[in-house]
Image 1 (cartoon, helix red, strand yellow):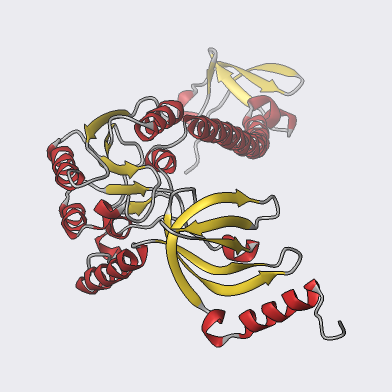
Image 2: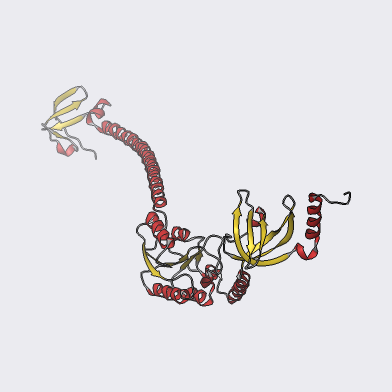
Length: 377
């Protein structure tokens, strides 16, 4: 029995043979997902099957985090990976390196081809983007009349800025009938003179579900509109050609509603801040004006005081001059004044012999008779 292998040795041998076989290190398989099990660790365990067989598969967390869609039971996928052996059970499984929805590979290559061609034409140029109005009165929405998208947009706008009104142009957003309806709805809103901005929206989905928004006819329609367009298609990780040609891309329909109108709470806060700033500015202005008035009052008082002092000095000088010219002052200096019949004598010719004269002195008066009048020759 020395040549017999243990079960562990045999499983290890099989593992080594399978995992080291060059043609099994990287295989590409397609089939339908069954029995999917997502672990809290982030690893995904599932079965890939077709009509006649099935294969256990595992996708480790690091690879699973790179997926741009959510795998689910019944989904047809294309897997790339290598064969591995789970030693405790002696079973082999496919360790998945990448996963894509079946048919998506061709769609994605067509997406890239169209994107490159339209980009080369200049349809995505930033210079062509039209500004989004800040306070639109009317917002047009192109989406399905049913479902969560239009409900979320209405609810968000009503909460943020109730003055903004919405006009819905309903359209299918998936399937063969969606493309002409989407174009017609956009053109209808574009002709409405009240509409100031259009939201083109739908919920998330696979690349195939969103394919209408990669159709060249719809992309050129968006580019040719007069009204600015916000593209809100799918989830944040989803991109369509309409996102590139639109004037603004929103990661979700709800985000588009938030971007299309301001938040009334933010406006109120801004107004309160502006009011406080204006009040503070007014207070500062009043304080400065009061200081200017106070400074001028001080200067005026100083000017008035100086002028009063000057006027007082001039008045005193005039008073002294007037006092000096007063007859009493003249008499006090030893002069006298002669009167005839109460009139002051100015010339000798005003007096005749025999007249009675009165001479006024500083301390009294003297009466006298004129005996002789003598004039200067």
